[in-house]
Amino acid sequence: MTFVLTCWTVGLSVLAILWQLGLRFLSLLGALGRASALWASAMWGLPGRGDVKLVIAQIYNVGFLSLLIIVLSAFSIGAVLSLQFYTQLARFGAEDAVGVGLALVLLRELGPVVTALLFAGRAGSALTAEIGLMKTTEQLSSMEMMGVDPLKRIIAPRIWAGLISVPLLTAIFNMVAIYGGVVVGINWLGVDPGGFWGGMQEGVEVYEDLVKGMVKSGVFALLVTWVAVFQGYDAPPTAEGISLATTRTVVISSVLILATDFLMTLVFYGEF
Amino acid sequence: MRMRTIEISVGGFVLAGAIALVFLAVQVSGARSTGTQNSYDVVARFDDVAGLRERAKVSMAGVTIGRVKSIAVDLEWGDAIVTMAIDGEPGNLTSDTSARILTEGILGARYIGLSPGAEEEKLQNGDEITETQGALVLENLIGDFLTNLGKS
Image (cartoon, rainbow over all chains, first blue to last red; front, side, top):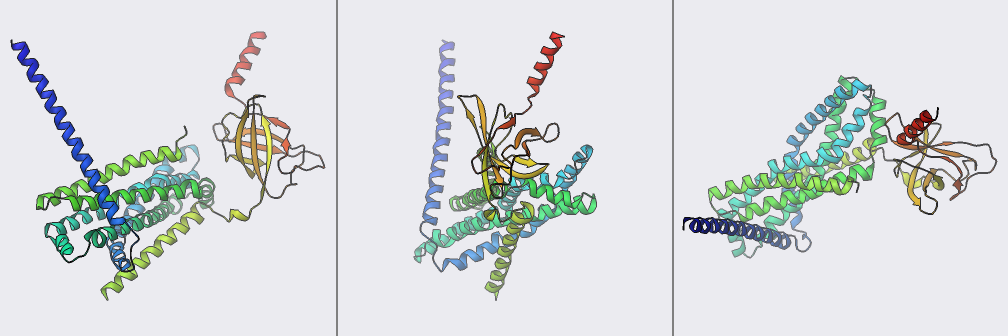
């Protein structure tokens, strides 16, 4: 008798867990659907003439104001990479390879990834909070009342600004990081400049390294701005909802950046 | 006034990004106007290319004069057909040029080393280098060594 009862309870709890999993999956699918609809309706059609000013203002917010953190991080990362490469390579008398190692690591991986992570933390969270607050204070609905489409006026310029800013920030990040590597490697540790730059130019290819890195950075820009804008737009209109949405923006976009980076590296550089 | 500051800042930002891209292309990648540079194709057959890759260097006397364009296998003869793009106009290599697959350092990348011959005739676009020596494969070397050891 007790045996049958135990079987029943176990069976029921398994069913309940499965039910919960199904619900979670369905809500995930629903969020993905809403996010796609948001993106599609915001980006539908070309931006009009009047939107240029809005996009410029947003590039200022998400791009120009992120410059300081990008430049500072890039310089330290370049300097640290150069120092680490040097201490390892000097044991084999291969200090000249510092240049090519630094440039390849930066152009292929660290430049796009770290820039996108910093962008998600610096600009993505701000986007989410801003749009979430606009929704909470019913600015978005009042816009709709006035016949202004908030998707076109608020969402689209922010997505465009992200798509333009992140690749530019990545290029600046790479340049400053290489400069940081030069300061440590050549000016401080005394690597031969000829071997440093020569090895770099010999080993780095425009298409294979620079262009593919920039493609990565464009994909990251798309992901981060999309997640940030959607989380803000979809946040429950409460103080707690906005705070949760801001956290989720940073967490989800960081995980997405690292996961897609692995996939893209596999596709770009993997040998099957 | 406020909008003007924003516009100037964004202009400076875009300009900085453009400068960074040019710097990365020219100073870091060493991009030169490769469009104007001529090259012609030369084919060579090797019995074993072991580890040679496309875009590997083709060099003569240690100087890079071209790149490996494609590697294919000839199933009928069981050897590899390597197409090389040699810089410059056709006619800068003698027809009895020989090709060897070499290794940079002990563990470095494979590349093709060309040695000039003495013929008057020159290699033209699409010609074949007949005198070739494939890559040294460590396993084969050890195998030969052990066989010889057994004989003596």
